[in-house]
Structures are given as C-alpha cells and as structure tokens.
Amino acid sequence: MSYLKPKLFSVIKNYSKEQLIKDVVSGIIVAIIALPLSIALAIASGVGPEKGIYTAIVAGFIISFLGGSRVQISGPTAAFATTIAGIVLTKGMDALVMASIMAGIILVIMGVFKMGTLIKFIPFTITTGFTAGIAVTLFIGQIKDFLGLTLNNEEPLIEALDKLKYDIKCINTFNWQAFVVGMVSLLILVLWPMIKRPKFLAKIPPSLIAVIVGILMVKLINMNVATIGSAFGGISNELPKFTAPKLSFSLAREMLPSAFTIAVLAAIESLLSCVVSDTMINSRHNSNAELVAQGVGNVASALFGGIPATGAIARTAANVKNGGRTPISGMVHSVTLLLILVVLMPYAALIPMPTIAAILFVVAYNMSGWRTFVNLCKSAPKSDIAVLFATFVLTVVFDLVIAIEIGMLLACVLFIKRMSEQTLVQGWKLVDDENDPDSISLRKVPANTMVYEISGPMFFGAADKILGITVKEDMENLVLRMRSVNSIDYTAVNSLTTLQKNCEKNGVRLILSHVNEQPMSVLKKSGLFDKIGEENFCEHIDAALLRAEQ
Image (cartoon, rainbow, N blue to C red):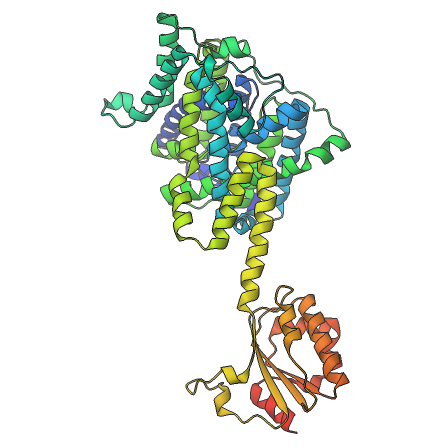
C-alpha cells in the first residue's frame, strides 16, 4: 500500500525551521482568505454559516494530513453548492450526511483501487459545461440578497429558474440600501487587487476588506440591511461535535446518485487543483493518496457537522504564493480557523447578506470559465459543442446529477458515432500506391476471389459494415485483410460469424490475413477461429492470396 503514502510523511524528513515559519505564515493567511468564503459557501449551500467553518477545519486538516499533494488546501467549494442545497431543501440534513459518507467511501475505494487516473476519461466539454452551469446557478441564487428582495414564496425555491422567476416577480420589494452595500462590497472585491498598496496590506484578501467595510456601513450608518445574524440567528462558536448519522438502506439507495455526483466532483476538483499546484512548485502529486484523503475527509466532515469538501484551487494557489510548500500549511490553516471559530464567530453575525452575495458573485465569475466556454464554441467540433451546451443547460434547468449522466451518455454516443465512421470496409480497387510494399497494385488477385481491406476498430458501432460484404455466386474465395484492425468486440465477432455462415452456405472459402493479437485472441475464445480453420488464417496478404490460388 505504499502508493497511498501521504505526502506529509515524505516531505517531513528534510523539514527545516525556515520552511516551518513559511508554512505557518501561509496557513494563517489562507485561513483569513477561507473564513468569509467558507461562510458564504455554506449559506449558498442552504446550511448554517458555521457548517462551512466546520468543513474547512475537519476536512481541511485530515486531507492535508493524509493527502497526496504538498500544498493542497481543501474545504467547501462552489462546485457543491447547488447539489447540497437541493439535497437539504428536498430531503433534509440526514440525507446530506448519508450522501457525504457514501461519497467519501466511493472516493476511498477509487484511491485504493488506483482509479486516480480514470478521471481523465471525463471529457473536458462536460467539466466545462457543468462548471459554467454551477456558476450561473450560484449567481442566480444570490440576486435576492444582493438586491435585498423579499420573496413571497410558500415553498422553498430549489431550481435556479424558479429563483429567477420569483426575483423578477418580487422586484417591487427592491431595497436600495442593500443594493448600495452589495455594490460597494463588489467594487472592493474587484478593485482591491488592482490598486497599488503598501506591502503590509498586499496580503490582506479583498473579501476580508469587503466584510469589514460592509459591517461598518450597516452599523455606523444604521442601514436597513439583512445580516447573517438576522437571517440565521447568528453563528455558533461551539467546536465541531461528533453526531451519529441516521443510516438506513432505503435512504442510502435514494442518495446513491447524489453521492456518486459528489464523489466525481470531489475527485475532479481536487485532482485538478493538484495538477495546477504541481506546475507552480515543480512537484508531482500522488492522485490515489489524494482520493483516499478526500474520502476520509468527507466522511469526517459529515460526522462532525460539516458539508462535502474538496481541493480549492484559489486557496491552494494562495498557499503557494505565500510560501506554503508542505501539508503543514494546510493543517495550520485548519487550526487557525478553529481558533477564529472560538474567538471571533459571534462577530460574524454582523456580516451583511449583500456582502456575502457580492463575494459569491465573484466566486461564480471566477469559476465560470467563460473564456474557455466561448473558445470551445468557436473551435470545437459540433459534437463537442452539443455535449457542452447539453451539460450546461441541464445543470441550470435541472440539476448536476442529470447533467453529468446525460452529458456522459451523449459524449459516449457521439464518440461511438465518430469511431464507427473511422472504420472502413473497402475493396482493393480503392487502394493503389506503388511506393507501399504492401500495396495491392503489386499483387495479382486469383480468379473468382474478392479481397476486402478492413481499417479501424471492429466494434458494435461499426459491425454492420461487415454485413455489407456481398458473397456472390461465382465467388470461390473471400479474403479479409485485417492488418489495420487492432481491436474487436463480440458484436463484430457475431457479424463475422454471420459472414462465415453465409460463405459456407455458398461454398466460399473465408480467408483472414494479418490478424492482430487482440482480434486473434477474441476469435479463438469465441470459437470462430476453429470454424474458419487454422489453415485459413495467414500472416501476410501474400500467403492469403497463395491460399486462395491453391
């Protein structure tokens, strides 16, 4: 099990005092960045603000301790917000705990069975589509608080389009004071990184400045604006407590699709964050150890009152930029948040909701990847664009589970279609190249013999092309040249069996030339090798033509 060895155990051997200082400083700075984000993302997920802090503390510490990356920072992220909110509003917190634990177990299994590299089989168009879709739903979900609207809905709003509809319907409840606070906060978030400022201010995150200014505006000017305290009754400063989950087989079966979605998202986000950080510090992460750590961290987060967690690219990048080079910085980040929870959390109740909405607007914009989206629309094949838009629209209109399922199905179907178009079954008359020693033009085809060249994989999407070979009455030999066939499945074997029976019925000898290793193995296992006869399998086209002539 050495492939699951945490990165911490490797880097600690040559750990220095100088690096410890850098890791501690970086961990504290990242904790300050993570504080408002964790609160905002918990609110966007439809749970109490303190649950975002619990997640960053519990999952963040465990994932850094057990993970396969030197600098990964984990915690709540925007990728989970809409999925979590949907689960909480429709099925309750017990369902979320169940889904989180199941997702954690799935992640551990993926890591143990070395499935870290399988994430690459999820098409880029799907990840781009659902990421942009999540960004849009996150943005729509914050319009209410940014404009200070009072929605007169009786049922909780889950779907993004329902939220947008009620925002428009209740626009007459617009609160200009909330809008002013939100706009000032948004301008700070956008402009603070652009302006020149003293070195000691350079490391202060814009989200913290926006929170402080928002609190001062509401308190000093006495503005009529909703705060976390008025919306949620404040934030508890109690330490995360272990809570035994309410488990049942029926609930587990119901939450399996959501658990799978959470696991896939956690794997994609965390491994992508690892890849990005690797390029920044010239290192290499252990993907399987990272998946196991993410799984254990998510299970622990659920048991201690948190929500699903994964690697956060922005916080990981901030860790690198501030000198963090070992998992110690991620562990310090979690311990710092624990201290802040105990000492300062009651004051977080003063944070205005429009400020939280502004922070999430910026998070949505940064994760949208709109430039990549537009570039794909301009340059990608039509089939990829179809997958991109289908995943994006389904994420916004329905939910992430449906979007990933249908997106993957559509991508697979279109891929099969493209691959089937690459498989060709042609007569020799289409080939004529005197510079090729294997060219047909250099050979004489015996009388009453037909030769077909098969190019590309022989699988269920192209098996019908084999049945297109016509067995004529005056034909004595049918030669199939298979030097360009590297793989075959049983559907194609079934089509070859039908062709062999048709040849046998009409007294035609079927000869196969240059059958590669995988197709030969499949033909032997299926029994078709014996039916055709070993003497009719030739290593080269010359031997096949000689066999036909004899």
